[in-house]
Amino acid sequence: RKATAQALPAFLLIGPSGAGKTSLLTLFANGTPSPTHTSQETQTATCQLPSSALASTDRYRSVNDHTHDQPQLLLIDTPGHGKLRHHALASLTPATALKGLIFVVDSAAVSSAAGLTETAEYLHDVLLVLQKKHTQSRTSKGSQGIAVLVAVNKQDLFTSLPVGLVRQRLEEEVARVRLTRSKGLLVDSGVGLTDDGEADDESNWLGQYGSKEFKFGHMEEYGVEIEVVGGNVKGEGEEKGRVDGWWGWIGENL
Ligand code: GTP
Image 1 (cartoon, rainbow, N blue to C red):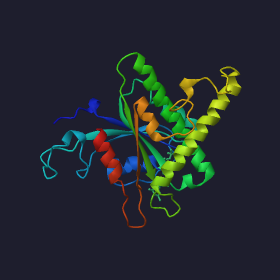
Image 2 (cartoon, rainbow, N blue to C red):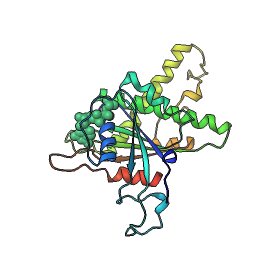
Image 3 (cartoon, rainbow, N blue to C red):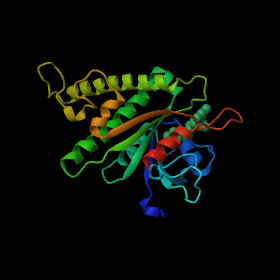
Image 4 (cartoon, rainbow, N blue to C red):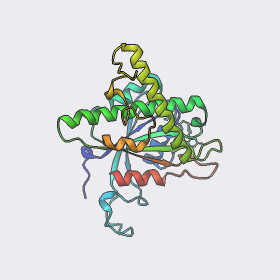
């Protein structure tokens, strides 16, 4: 099996500053997380799927068959800082052929109201870009879906929230962000009012239009398949990180 450099499947790392994107990239690329600093620009690394994770293409291969090379992939890290997020969002243009998107969350930071809001705002905006991309491509050529992994990182910290709770709080907060944004639109434009006082801007509304609740599952309608999986890039003391679930997701989506 050959993997040509330009044809490597690509995954984008995205998420708020400090969530652990660069740590994850260096761990996946070098086998160990390097000390990182706030990223100023996008960086890319070639990684190899570990033998513990099966690629979807290898579903019928025995785990004990080591005659094949494990597949390679590209990981693209984006800066999380608010002022640099246009770099990340620009990577989502229809031109980029991405296999998937890994949205990294700091599961300790989201236990504070401010941390939760910051994370949910970014997640909302990313998902809305994906939704628009899907809606636009639907009218032209056949639209392709995209897989999104919400990587609930830093599960090693005792201040972290468990995965199920992070998922629930993110869904609730994204719903709140969505409502705030739609009111913002109203104020900005002064138009688009319907009889019941809602902003009539369906294309800027994430997920099921007008619905009160937001669930990640609602995004499937727009070709966005979301999975929420916990782990940690770093472990306590001598302990290693726990990233098998994320590798497993990458393998399934290669
Ligand atoms: P930006 O480059 O600003 O977008 O941030 P980033 O998302 O790339 O975060 P980075 O990888 O720089 O990690 C931020 C801090 O979190 C670093 O001090 C890491 O050592 C730490 N960190 C990352 N992952 C984990 C983890 O799983 N557990 C713990 N305890 N710390 C982690």
